[in-house]
Amino acid sequence: MKKRLINLTMLGILTMPGSWVYGVVPPPAVPEHTQTIVKTPYDDKIVIANTKVFGTLEYPAVVFDHDKHTQVLEKEGKTCSACHPRYGKHKDVISFTFPKGIRDLRTTTPKELMHAYHAECMGCHEKRYKEHKKAGPVTCGSCHVKGVDLSKFTYPPVDFDFKLHDTHLKKLQAKQIEEVRAKGMEQPVVVRFEHDNLDPAQEVAIEKKAGEKNCALCHHSYDKEQKKLVYEIVYDKGREIDRAWACEDCHEPGARPSPLLAADISLTTHKDLPMEKAAHIRCLNCHLLIARDEGADKAGPVLCYKCHERKAIPARELARVPRPKAGQPATCSIDIRDAGMKSVPFDHEFHEQHVDSCRACHHETLYSCDRCHTLRGNANGNGISIFDAYHDSFSQKSCIGCHRTEETAKDCSGCHHASIVAQEPTRQMCSRCHSGQARVAMPPTMTTAGLNRERVKNVFQIKVLENQFKPVKYPHEKILVKLAEVSNSSKLATYFHGNIQTLCAGCHHHGAVGAQIHRDVPPSCSHCHSRYFEPLRSNRPRLLAAYHEMCIQCHRHMDLKKPKACTECHAFAKKGQPQAAAGNNEPDTK
Image 1 (cartoon, rainbow, N blue to C red):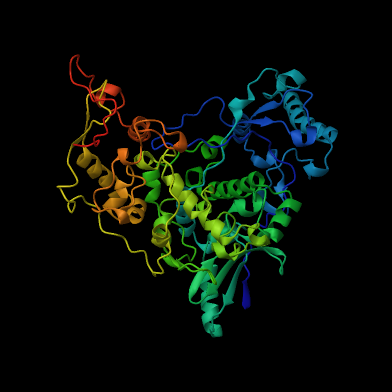
Image 2 (cartoon, rainbow, N blue to C red):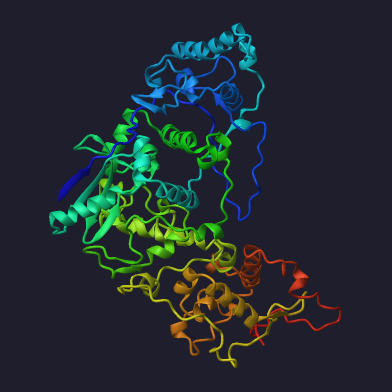
């Protein structure tokens, strides 16, 4: 393996002592349509309550009006550096720490931090009073106000989705490399050549092309050999693969971080660079530099609410946004060495359109799953085997777990709701994925045209339990046509359903197609469910419960307006009308 270094300069952000401390709440579920954000009096206010240093607060937390302060300073021709120190030797880069006198919160005592806050804030206010300028308070109770609802001043995390990524990518591509380099915001790009026999001229050409990428402005990793941040590109078998790790991979690694990122995580921990801190340094500095040179209308936001309360992008619109290109294949074959199952054809490009982040699957790095997860599990994969990584039904990162989540959608949950007893996986179910084919082969569009009309009735009556109510007229074909329509509208459903008989299993969920005389006539409910309670089969509902559980739960999960009430399915029987005998075991269809 060869390695070349393209010498580009970059904002090497490795330290940031101190921080703004403000509340963060979990992001709400993203609705399909959202309202336009309206600025409120609570926007751009920050809660200062550094409990990591202070512990239990003696006085109430301070609600700091950041927007008001920046407006006053801007009118006086002052910038962020009035409160925040410059970063290292970079004259145009701000280290968003406060107070200025604190270099490392981890070694700061509560008393030192308190005096530093008072010196910065009260010192500025007192100075302005002496200069006969409008100034803030200088007494304890004016800042430390009792009874303030601090939950009003919380901000959700920034949702940096594919739309926001695409906006940044287009903006940076439009800029010349020289312009970006002049701002001191590029960083070294390392090209690693693996398994390729290229001559020096080809390598130089590849390196030159790689150096023109602006991905390095945001993405980087730590090179242990050079002991610096780099943007790594791997050239392997004709493919250019970008190691564009997400910020969270190293700055917010979670409880069980990957050993593959041990050096990076060790650095961010040692330098005290959690996600919140690193994001404010990198994002805000870039926005401020572009605003200075090109105007505020050409730059990204610098106010809290404009990032943290950004309008959510509807899922349909987000699906049309181009996905980042980091050398990933459009399609691939998942073939695990020494595994006992056939390979799985995987449409990577299709899956990209149905997630809002690469981290939906690649939860720590952009490596393929088998880089960390092996057949028997190891330390790199936190002991999780490759089988569990793909098949764990309780993990949102696994194939099965993600598909199970899709089954909870309104159109799917009618058949897939939890109250239906799940069947064990069959060989046919496994082979839908483990086909051994190079590409995904989609089954034909589902239709009811080929069904035997003599056996599959359009409408029939369910009257085996006729007593207090009249028989139910069941629109069998209408329901089947609707289910086929729903299935055809989803590529996931189309692929896994395969044929119309699968839809039949939504109701006839334990029918044995291979043992039936007629393939398209599954058994009726009364063949398995007795009219009366069976003590030896306590886990099997009786017929009345089976009908209502299956039908009513389906209507509820699919959010159907009708039918839900009793008489919307079967009217009350009139007085004097013949009733079914108590012991009548006639078929439930006619």
